[in-house]
Length: 302
Ligand SMILES: [Zn+2]
Image 1 (cartoon, rainbow, N blue to C red):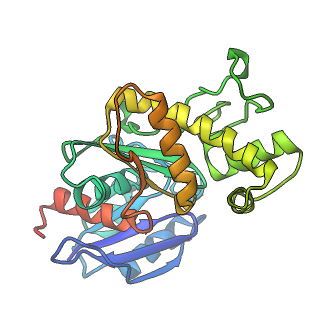
Image 2 (cartoon, rainbow, N blue to C red):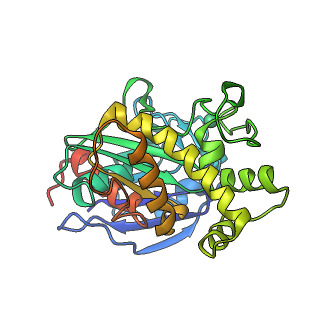
């Protein structure tokens, strides 16, 4: 039996791939972030019998082709060939998929994108990520980074525009002005600080906005405009049937509704129905996507 894992910087969540193809969480343990041997033992302790495969959804930018991890919040994995090295250490087949790709695949196969041709799953949370699935197949692209719409210095205050006071924030990828630097929860907080000179958490900002607070409304207006503008280019490029959302900010239904309306107003195609929706697997897309990936990699029937 295949054991599926959803590994982030805080927890390793795990569950078994059931006959119906679903993966229910069976438990979690703290992620050993700085010790490779401890990390291997943590995964081994929750894996099946020797030789039985594991499938892992891994948080962070991850080269789907070379297998090299770029996982800032789990330093012991950084720049390793994680799949090869785990296969050797665990003595069993290992499949690995990026968490955003896992979420997009889960949505396309079993969630909001079921039966639809083009599904672009996005994460709006501590970071901004995404995965593109076309005709049921994940598009990894040249370099294995396809879907990573959070990076690339598109927010440029020198290019004009109507939003004043938003700085060219530094991004974790080394550039400035990325969607990740403005569209993540931290980005929302940076925008709020730039506009109002005060520090608020993204949760405080969205709560205040839902209560019609003036400052928070200005922040959310700028935030949603910047995210929608970036999404509009992707919508015109890929023509998604649906954009399911995961990540902490996907829990705010009013925020998703606002981003959806702004984005649909900016694109060429006439989307009469909702385009941007909370994902059916917003909470457990990693485990579910790891299960689908395992069935494809290991040929397990469901
Ligand atoms: Zn970046």
